[in-house]
Image (cartoon, helix red, strand yellow):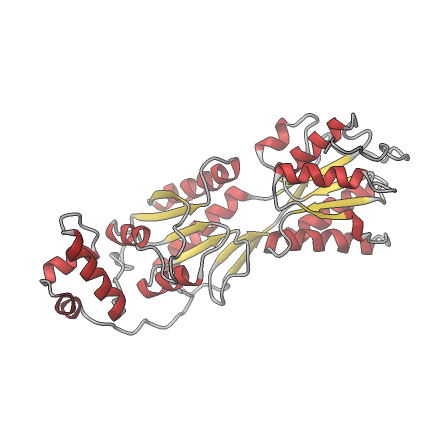
Length: 359
């Protein structure tokens, strides 16, 4: 991987050695390396296999002594407001830096232990100077692929702990969980549930840890039955809310670890003919546009997505110029945005247990 202050990758076989191994001319081998289309399929296959077999390292086509012109942004998908916020942040910072951005949705998964060659070949062929990733995770093979080519990259809000030395930008998720829970405690709630995302992700686990820490600091007993996981899925969050309402002593407030899941919680409460916040207070996380559009408008923890993306781009530019970064992990502050979905507890059980077939 490209790391701040990492050692230079040793030189590998030359293109002439690859060409000899594949039984082709050096210009032909060069066409394959650079993603040219005017190569016969069988010839391309022989050269590609020789590249893999010999461990040929494609040299990045940029010069760190001058301002690079092109970077790649790879996001999980392009059909969410989350991705839109990330893209906006990257574009704004790239404009300031005089860069152009190529956006890709998703990254091919490895086959038989080896990464797909298409996307990295295109990146190398178009001369991208670095890559920003806003994906759930990269595979070890994909990390190794980037490492071989010495291409600088930064992860935006990685789901899991990156390998040592990999540069990433995220949010202060633990503090966000504390803020959300303290807000509900301050309103007088003591029966506070949490609907979390995935169990073993960086952001998901940190938000739940913040929730538990705030309860402990307030001397409120933590209830295991009040912790539910919905994998950041709106429909699953709806089901988890129904489960909470079916408890003998249901909560009076719920901290939902994403705004999208909070919409599922709203749906479940509407199905029980319960009102937000009269019967149940709800706090989300992210502050996506959906939080403002919800009825009532959702109190939520603002995660600075645009700023995270812009910060990642600026760090990437520094790496492309060979700078040593002070730290590989950057966390930006979160803050509570108060709207209309929270109020003091009603002081009574919200509803009778849910009947079969309703949730």
